[in-house]
View 1 (cartoon, helix red, strand yellow):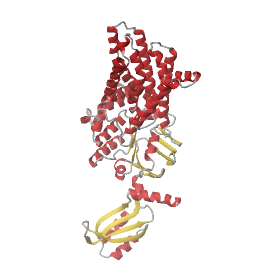
View 2 (cartoon, each protein chain N blue to C red):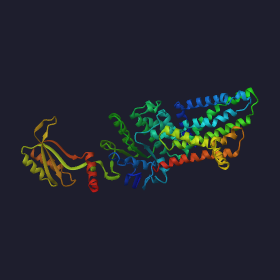
View 3 (cartoon, chains in turn cyan, blue):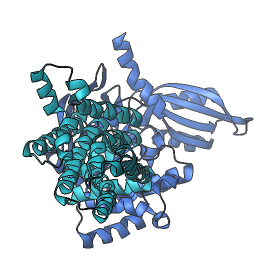
View 4 (tube, rainbow over the protein chains, first blue to last red):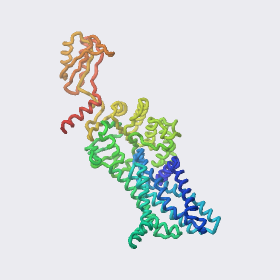
Length: 240
Length: 319
């Protein structure tokens, strides 16, 4: 536990020692505002909810999460500190968990800053906080899944740019799998399978404020799978 | 303290270790010597549990490096080649991080931090970002972080590469001081390094241990050098050649140092049959005959010579 905290603390400091954290927060919150007020025409719809925000969140995360995860392991490999970390008496899962928690914390901070939106909406009209809370929970879990994917990709390369692009491609793939534009091309049964595997289709119900346990289980298992894969990638390095 | 038995390692097609065995007793300071690519770094990475061997085994303080890497890692301090560190952290932040990762209790932590800062002489850079430090200071910070938990065993991979002569002396002094209480393995391809710090050298060439012994044993050659001014050269050769154990005598006019041959002085190289020491007999002749003497020494091989002699039989066998 202590070591997980130590790793997470170091990672968070590394985020804020570089411009990454600030750029991420700025772009994330900025993009959330823009999509909420403009693209989704909050004012013309005339309803006090956060649909606009939650419709935009999945794609926003696809684009921004890889920027948070690309350096997690690629940089350690590049600057050689991987050797320092992996020869400390720490288990690989402690290192993976620490890094994951740091990146998740930063993502949660970004989401937290968008809370000004529901607060504003609540001031203008009658806001139903239930769906909003559900939406934020769903967003946190969706983000966790993307972060896990990104960390795994980063553990397989020492090239940060490559880690960014690969994570983007995989996250976009998971996003697009269930998107209507793609899944709609398939016969009903296959389309249903695709929708159940896609992060965006899963998020659709969350965005409407419906919390389905199956959706949560899906995000948690996706996260668990890729975190375990990251641990596996670290263990496999000993065989190099 | 450290046992290595028939360690083998290959990466894809290239073989780095072809069956390396040696052991290190508690308190020994051992230099792992060899040309670049000989397998020194690979052997160390296996010892610290960073890499798995393809075959063979190694134990550190009784713990198997394959089965119980954590137990091994708890007991040793490791400084990888080039001392990789987090450039964005302050020196004190980094040491704090390492202390947390090593789970040092808080009271012990501040005491140990103060000690290693003092020992490694990094008190002046504690609040500087590591990325801005000179190579010498980085190396010292790396060393400080490696001994933070006061391990019994230290593994240092080329601790002085890239340092300037003053820094090299400082780091060597540090290692020598640590060697008084710890078991140390350090790798290098520089001979004076081993001379300065190590009691024993293990020479690794092409993934095999080619020699293992005290440095003196390894570099001693079978040549006794005598530089003196005998009045009669032929008689001198005869006398020196008559010492039991001398196989042949070569002589050359000695040069006087600054290029000019010094009149009367000759350098005699006595080729010996075995490792026996004939210095005393040679000195006795010089004294009895009343020659002026300038030098009397056992010739030493350079490390390059040792390497060459050790590799050549292998090349011949391969050819």
